[in-house]
Length: 115
Image (cartoon, rainbow, N blue to C red):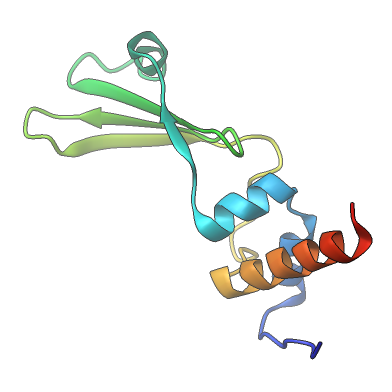
């Protein structure tokens, strides 16, 4: 198999390689959101007394997203709570192409080694 080349800084390449598998998957293909209960959603926004709180948690990486929906159905406020190991310093974030290449490399290694 030919080596695929991609323009990226050393920091971006290292950031992609250092991600845990579940974080790499979500950064590459998106989160698998499931709704939190009304009570769990409300605890995300104890400081906000208006709107409707909607909480979601990714079943793959455990990222939490909270939205406050206003009376017009618009997202008025959004927060994220990242799981440990998910964050990448600004300027070192790999683009999706590099993340896909890292995902493919890991998948192929797992397939070849049977891990």
